[in-house]
Length: 98
Image (cartoon, rainbow, N blue to C red; front, side, top):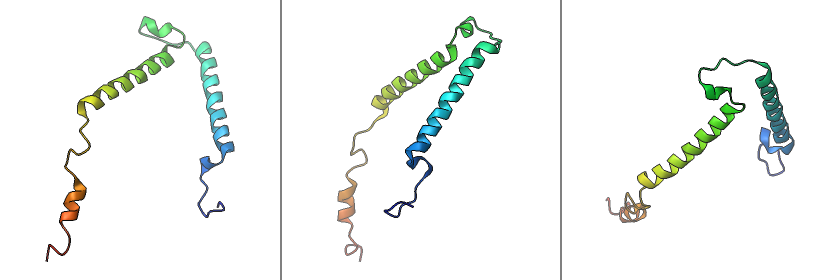
């Protein structure tokens, strides 16, 4: 436990975060090496391009963010869409209900 009495979690320690990141880097390096060793059976000609899947994933995420921003403008309501809830709460006090 820390000095303030709060429980320490796994990623509160910067050393644990560094270990996790190093593990992810090692996994990415192994997958990169395996991309050269293991032959792929692709059905589309673009799949033979080196790094196709990371590029495809990155472009997909960018498109997802752009569409989400567009949808936010389309769907978003103003701040007081349901009315001012504080005024409704102040008007109904327990004395009025008696």
